[in-house]
Length: 114
Image (tube, rainbow, N blue to C red; front, side, top):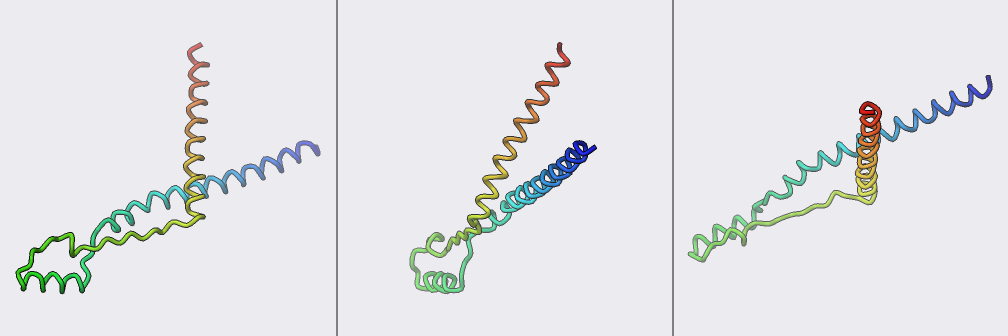
């Protein structure tokens, strides 16, 4: 009876740890995907008030106007060491999970075919 209780305890511990890792993976994966929108926003270029005033002044004085002179690009990195580690772990976890599922289905396929 004692051996069965030990296995049951280890089974519960393993399942809780697995669920914790799975939810952590899902959270980090979704966070990585949601960064796409922020990336697209950062690719946009913003005209500041100073640049608009300079543009209007150049147009009024008849100078050559090039749009690149008035556009400012801001790239803000929201990544931290923790987010980089999380992304690295989630990428590797997804690769391992993919390989495991492929191996399992390959094994099942071999069993079915003969």
